[in-house]
Image (cartoon, rainbow, N blue to C red; front, top):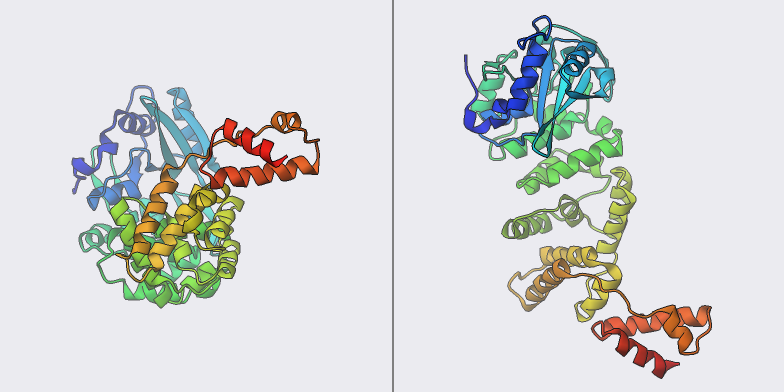
Length: 417
């Protein structure tokens, strides 16, 4: 039997993982009848592909019913949360020092009926049936406590070796079970095998799902698109989605800023970071398109505000302190980075000024305006509109003059009254 390489499967050798498997499998003293529980999915896949997986992202599959899972965990004093009990998922929480390790344990199941969004499931003891309901062959690999691997589809290990993301069985059937798998296919391909050719049958099935993909909830589309935009190969993924006529059904708008996205990715690479929402902004042709995208992806009010501030006006470099103070450091950084991404000459003076603006935004700490109501009353202003107007006028003066201290503000107030 093939086994996991220990260097990429540290999560498996953790005492917490091993204890949980012992408790669930009944191999620890007094834990009940023997059962079979294995690690599954992303942690196994990534270990085989040489990708480090966070120790907090370990999923397990078991032939125990969820009530028995909870009973065994409770007996051992392990904290449990019925996170998805309706679909057979229980979360076990153990600790590594102060770090919570959350394990999702799901009873083996098969889909009885699906509508492209939700599935009616039935529990099973059939590992082949559980594997068959999953999306991709590389996600249907299971590992025992000692690292022994199980490949029920007979294709997962070979596809990992070949750097190939493939649906299990008929791609169209897998997609019709959950249309979000279209975006998951692009995400996994460009995360794990960005240089490989995309599977032709998978692409054809994804393209045929454009209309129902549009009807998925905005929250689900948003989650997947932001994950795609967070990838190092986000530009390739976005372009592939457009070539497959899938980008507009997801975003609700025609994306045109692929050169800007590539430029932004280059900037991110130098800076050692990346912002998926900003990358999405770089694709948009207008502020109107941003509003459409916000609706299509059901962005939060905070996210909508960020789009509006970033795209509604260009950055005024001549009045940078005012922009930082009144619009916020995030808006200034977004505007500067988007301007850099659209700049024809990245070595120009304009580019240098925009880089300086980005640095200023990242270092900016908003100062507190030192003017108080007591100061204005002492100067002879009565409560009401006049006091409010004076406050706004002085605040603008204070910002334009480099945020002087309270004494300077008091002196300026005295001059103006």
